[in-house]
Every structure is written in C-alpha cells, then in structure tokens.
Amino acid sequence: MRILVVDDEPDLCEILRFNLESEGFIVDCAYSAESALAIIAGGTRYNLILLDVMMERVSGIEMARQLRSSGDSTPVIFLTAMSAESDLLAGFDAGGDDYVTKPFSFPTVLARIRAVMRRSEGRSDADGVDNTLQSDGLFVDIKRKSVSVDGVPVSLTKKEYMILTLLMQNAGHHLTRERILDAVWDNDTYVNDRSVDVHIARLRKKLGRAGNGIVNHTGFGYIFNNQVKGPESYTAIKDKES
Image 1 (cartoon, helix red, strand yellow):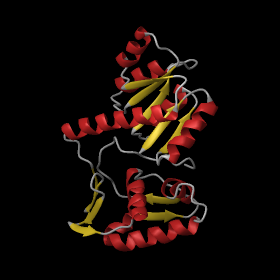
Image 2 (cartoon, rainbow, N blue to C red):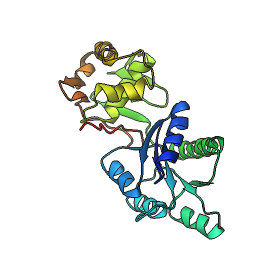
Image 3 (tube, helix red, strand yellow):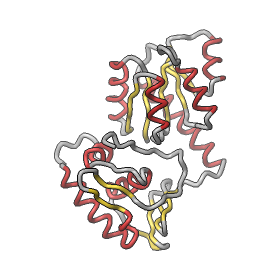
Image 4 (cartoon, one colour):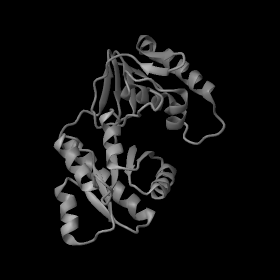
C-alpha cells in the first residue's frame, strides 16, 4: 500500500511518514500541490493521498479537482484546519473521500485511512476491476498473492513476490538496488545490495523463461522489460535515480 502525503509543513509530513511506515505503508511526501501533481504525472501510482487543504499557490481542493478532472480516482483524505460545514462540503465537491481536522491524533488518521481503503476496495470489486498483472504468460493475482507461468503455479517467498510485483508495476523503468531495498526490506539494517541480487537470481530461476524479462543494467539497476497489462490503480514506485 503506497500513500502520498501532501503538506507544506515538512515536520508534519515526516511525522506522518514515520508513523505510516511503522504500520507497513510505503510513503512519499510532497511539500506542495505542484510537486505532488508532477510526481503523479511522472507515472507514480498511489492507493491513497493525504492532502492538506491550505497550501500556497495551488490549494489541496484545487489539486483534488485537477486529479478528478483528469480521471484519477485515487482516494483522497483532506487534512484541514477548517471545520465549517461550507469548507467541508467544498472538499467533498472537489472529489475528497474523507477529511481529518487539524490538530489530529495518528490513530484517528489511521482509522480514516483504513475506512476509506475498505470502501475503495469494495467499489473496485463491485466494478469488476481486474486485480491482476500479466505479461507474456506470467500471471500475478494481487488479491490472492499467487503467481503462475503459462498456467503453472509458481511458489515464491514473500520477498520474491514483492520484488516481482514491484518490477512489473514499474515495467520499463529502472529501479536501483537501494529503491528495491527500501520497498521490500524497509529499515532492515542487516541486508545489503547483495541481498537484492540473490533474491532476484532465485526469482528469475523460479519463473523460468518469464524470468528473462527481469534485466540488470549496470549503473542503472533492474528493469522489467516486457509489457505489462494490469490496473493502473496499483502502486508504482518512481525511480528517483532515473
């Protein structure tokens, strides 16, 4: 689950990042609506956006309007110091899914996130959204956490599965070993770049011919070269080195 926190208060962003990552989320921060829109335009996909209302130049409400007008349906929870009914209605009219009034406690934020995600997942299931990633015989069922090649099930460890989905969701983009470590191993200080190489070598072997889509370009990192079909609503990690 990947979350984008958008707030012009860096300290608040870092507090939210720390607490959300402690709950197992992958978190990116942007300190303006312009920066957030640029990240999203660059191809990074999120499961949810925590969006401050009051920001300079482009407000959170205006950013939400731009997202919705472009067809982006990513759930948005507004972070707002305003509590007047008219202000809250303006947020919902702009496409917001919920709001949290400042100052807030983290348990409140976490509860709202989980509630919005449950509603969002319910809508996806009802709409018949295909929760899969596919590429030339390689089939990943994200909901069931299962993988198969040419119809034959492939047994992967949790980390191998996470690496595979990470690469497929970023097909055509290089991911450095550092980015893969950050996403898969989180803050584990007992692993290094070699751990990535070892796990990917095992993953490629298990995938057989489908593993040829995973390529290492020296100096750039790993890339999944084959075209992937799948829902754009799933998370994607932007390679900060590219």
